[in-house]
Image (tube, rainbow, N blue to C red):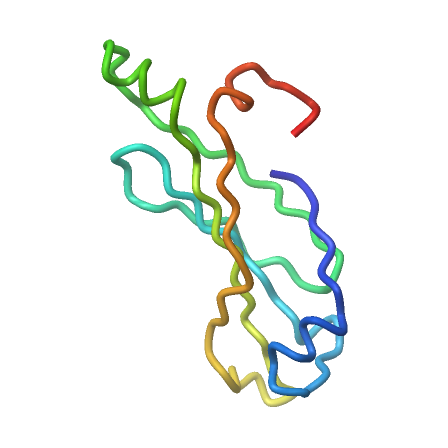
Amino acid sequence: MSTASFDRVTLIQLMGGHELLPHQMRTFVSIDFYNHDSKTTDQAEGYDVSYNTLFSFRNVVDDFYLKFLDNEHIVADVYAVPISQSGFKPNGVIKLGTAKLPLIKVIENDSSF
């Protein structure tokens, strides 16, 4: 995962109409893969962010795993952590959305997805 841009107007609506300055807006991504525990990126600040995280998963390659790779997805959930001027998190963590990334595209390293 590398970069993401968040629509400011949509985020204001999700925050109950409260606009946050870029330094008050933090996001992170949680990744679920196969039978591993969820992994998360570090928090990134702003509306245009860069997630520089590399995840590594060790697996036994057998027929079941190969079939999983052919037919399943990596699930990526994106969360916001709004921070007020005082450092208080007014609404806690807010889930912004979920993406299902087809594993076959990841394995093929296809730049079209």
